[in-house]
Image 1 (cartoon, rainbow, N blue to C red):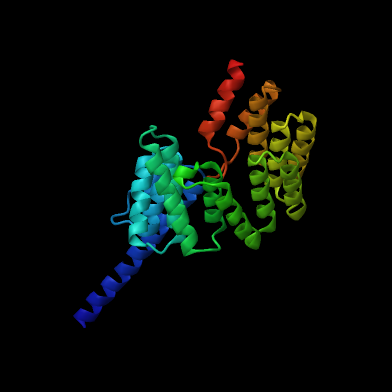
Image 2: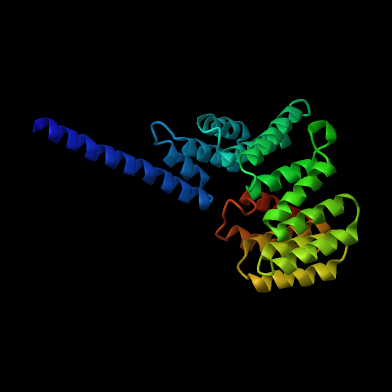
Length: 287
């Protein structure tokens, strides 16, 4: 009888500890989604032995905080624990990519190569992981040939994107056309993406930014107006309209007001960072 009681006590405690561990991860993930990265890390640091998903989330927090070395280290731990996870390799590629961007000219190529390898592995593990395919597409599009990039490789991936998401396919083709200086074709693809996904405000933002880049300011403004009507509370509209003004060195007073509103918005990790918005805001004030 005493053995049974002891067994039941440990069984109950085991359930409590498991439940507490699950609660820790959920709290940390919720804080991460609210861009409270330091608080999310504090919660995760209370875990004795992190799981693979906790290691990955720790790394993602460090990635968002700009500590790319720690980001790669922790996400690599998640990959080591679960080498069959497409998502872990995706985040590892993103961390190495940011590390490459911030590295010296001597170490950047190695970091870039590791980013490519991680993205490629992510796509190998899950051929329907659209985020991984998109990130690998961007790598192929922007990286020079000696680092494994190339427009032909990007074009082949665009076809795979088309099998999963027609609107995203036209966005990829727009970027390819622009890279090839085929500006009319690029615009047509941007517009086709809008037709296929008329409720996605990001499609309008893409076109508005492209028109501004082409010097077609009034047309860009009209498309930004459409985006704002579609989603009046979208932080992305505020940020990208402001950034477009700053890049084009126009309407800097409006850009300043938009960025102030952006910084007061409820942001997610998918939105541009507050740090980037603050840098843009300083540019409007110094102009």
